[in-house]
Length: 64
Image 1: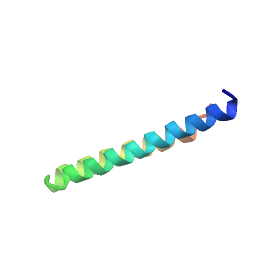
Image 2: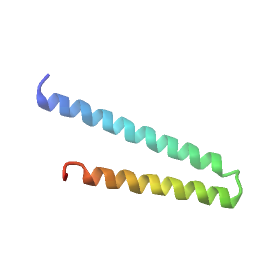
Image 3: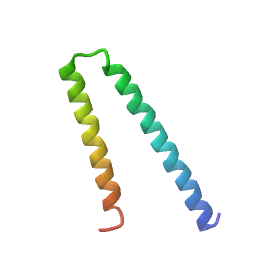
Image 4: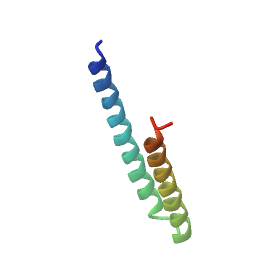
C-alpha cells in the first residue's frame, strides 16, 4: 500500500470516529433531556470540556 493510500485510509478512520462521537454526543443529549436542570448543566459542562480538550490535543499534535 502506498503512502497516499494509507493516509486516505486513516482519514476514513478519523471521519468514522468523528461521526461516531457526534452520534454518542446526541445520544447523551437525548438522555439528559429528562433529567433535572442541574444534572443536565453538569453533563453539558463535562461534554464541552471534553470537546475543548480534544480540540487542544489536535492543535498540539505535530508542534511538539
